[in-house]
Image 1 (cartoon, rainbow, N blue to C red):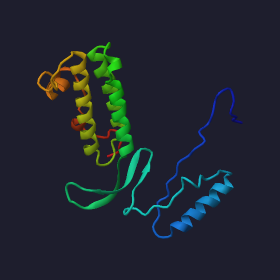
Image 2: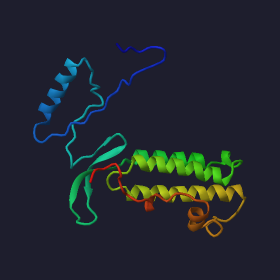
Image 3: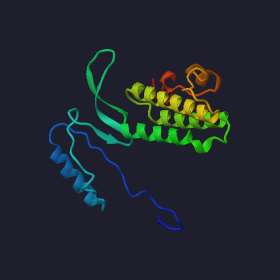
Image 4: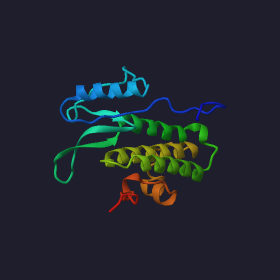
Length: 188
């Protein structure tokens, strides 16, 4: 028998998406009756019916909805990193390059940024991620350049002393937009 105790807690919230064609109301009623049998409560304020592809919804950090193929131009239902998660990563990058970290070495800042960027990109690697990766890369470069400029008390914008090539090639800042998109865990 498993019980909660001694500071051990099991997750209370379970997320669920039901995709169906046709009668969504019937699927919703079936889900509610199943949850009732399992003695689970459904949070009605968070439960909603969404018509994809006309609408999109966010689930586990991804936005699910209509995507467009860059090769064929055709639409398909797919995933992309949600704007909320991209903004959150940008805030974390800004926090890691704020003034309070002037006392640290450049190598330490770049290593922390790289761990953050690689961890984020390892999770958000499904669907059309290139626009998100480009936006995150641009923000990371700008923030690191700003941090270096303020650390060395430069009055210029810092683009001549710290160009993109210096940030990536010399300091070793990861460039997400050039990461290989291979999935070794996928079966061929």
